Image 1 (spheres, rainbow, N blue to C red):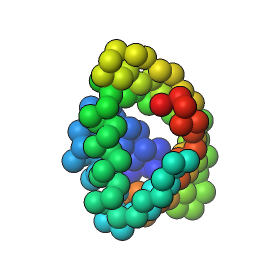
Image 2: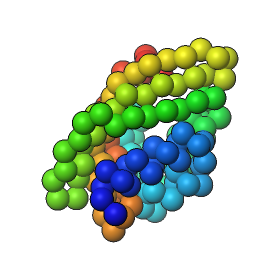
Image 3: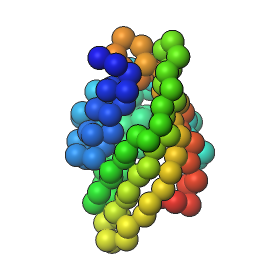
Length: 116
């Protein structure tokens, strides 16, 4: 499977708000970083995604540009988020994925937290 297909599958599972499927994309010892947190291990990453799954009615991520090199893929994306209150948000971001043996071993997320 191509790296972009793994990324699309990961975002599809986010859109379906399927926590177990989201987590299936991560290595047990994966690293996750964003402007607001640094997490290590699938159990810690799970806490972040529980908040996403429970905090939004809709999560729709569309990759717009990407480049791959070795085990890494850098992806620019657009995202539409609908909060449980019905408030809709649009944001852009950039993620750097490291994918080894078909799963995410490292995910570095770059976005404006105010957009979320």
